[in-house]
Image 1 (cartoon, rainbow, N blue to C red):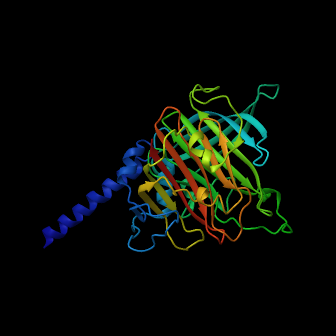
Image 2 (cartoon, rainbow, N blue to C red):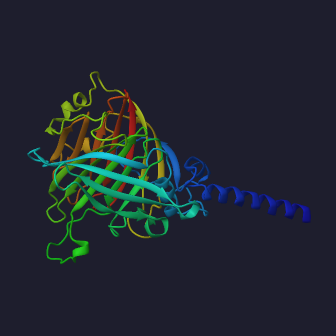
Length: 374
């Protein structure tokens, strides 16, 4: 009996040692850390329509890892996501499609520290070609203790109501979103630190080691009107980019023109794969973090934002470099809705779709990334 108890203790010690080694190596070897992690409500299922069906039964969260732990692991791991990226940031009026501004940004994402003390430093500079030169907008340190929550990763500058979530998979698709899209009372007075910026959705992905793309939407939080559409095409190899085109125009198109805008010349009958993330929108509410691998996604009907185009006043906008964005021109308060973008990289036979969805109550529903071979 004593021998059996000793063997059990030895086995438990070895398991603890392996997990500890994996966690302490998170910054030095992200792939090792990722392979040892326990999933949080992680499952896979075949795609079954446009609804983000909640998986609150049958999948149990590990006692050893919290949603905050898993959000941090998704955020801090993955090769090719960090470094310095030059980007051309463009913003358009969603109604007239006029270019509102264009800027050269230099954004740095560096993982610093070791083991459990590692953190990500995010720094942004705006590079002007006139007497202003390079303007430093400052840096922010994203740490696990201060920024990782059950609802995702908080940005140090925005401490309530919005977080980042990062999917598994090569693209490391990321969404930055408000937890609730509700109509604010214009009579409410806000202090300068919390000055009203509107409701924002930004969706980000990487392509290979050097290329990143983000697309954002900003809505007025009182009227619900879309104020602008923006994107940032980034390249870590310098500026101007040899990958991205120079065109900065945006055009409204119809749903029937979508395939042509993506360079799809034949009838689309594709089946794809992807990942979906759901979070507890309010503290202690269901579901806990769910990371769902989606399989057998049929192209037809997989985007809620496209399916709702006939019912809502939806903008379908063609951007350069084979991109299309879809989003309602105004938040349809009281109805479920979503915003999305589609991108076909010029050097790949893949179409990516990223979509953020909200329920009729205005609460965040899910974020999903899908990819289709063409």
